[in-house]
Image (cartoon, rainbow, N blue to C red; front, side, top):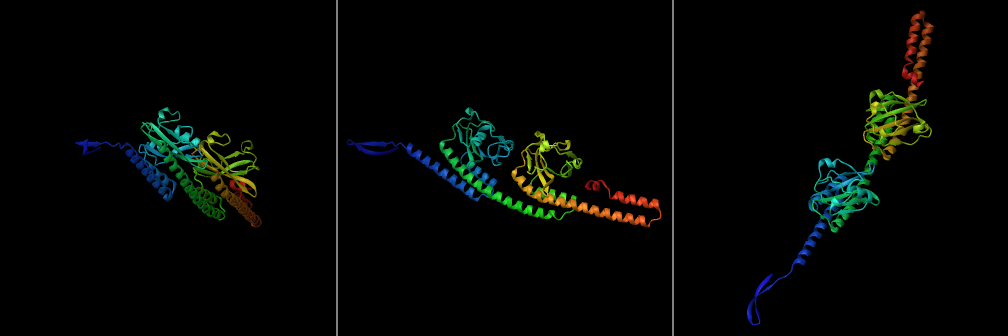
Length: 404
């Protein structure tokens, strides 16, 4: 309101002029919101261009959103396609540490519904939302945006508030823009990390397969196989099985009970198929629910399992078995990299077996020559027979008998 003196029909008066500033105030507020949005988008764009890995990118974007827009509850949940679950990233704000360690299936909660359908959900009152599942007490409003690259879901961007109708179409538009930029940035980082990982695997594979040819003693060869594969595929335990006369024997193991090594069982073609046609890696998501898996009391800890066939001269000679305490742990990428290694390991195992057989034959020939010399030169029959028996028995140990 403005007040000043003036004349009105020849008389001195005080004139007051009132001015409605509501529209101006609204315009100023809208301008401030736009500036805030632009600032947020600029900060997010910088984070997307400068982040060196996925964790850093998610942490920075969550901090920007939480510090400037929605302080109650916000963050990103990533989709694990092997388990068909969503898991909150460690940077998620406004929830308990316990909830950060909990994964949820896609049929549970608003976040799961958004990930499953790929469509945004904005709810002004979550208590009226059938899909809502409470993880943080007191939440009334929720806005959840899918983060997807083309048709592939990466995760969801979720914000919540303890106020009713807290989020508007403007908020939805802003978070959709952020989610779209994040999807592109995450895709680029994932491609870069995948390329780095494959280069590292290729180098490890080159070194590991090169080392295989330098071992002719089976014990040393087994240990080299276990240590090399540990660098390529994380496992809880591992074993090597060899096939002979229709039976499968566990000949070596890593992190498995000692009493399991040496166990034999008949190969069951009804369960696994014909040995001549079994040429592909086999992955079992949970062996405790699969009747094909040969179970021993000592290995009840095994859940996820992967079997890689070993071929020598186009004939299957055994398997590399990988065990995990986690269901659904192994995937096709694990199978591909280990099969490449297994092809070289099978050749090394067969060469070591042939080397042992040749060494055994040489020892037998040498023993026979010594026996013949003993017979030809001795005059005392009984002592000579004792020596001949000792030498004969030394050539017929259980391990050597098995290789004959």
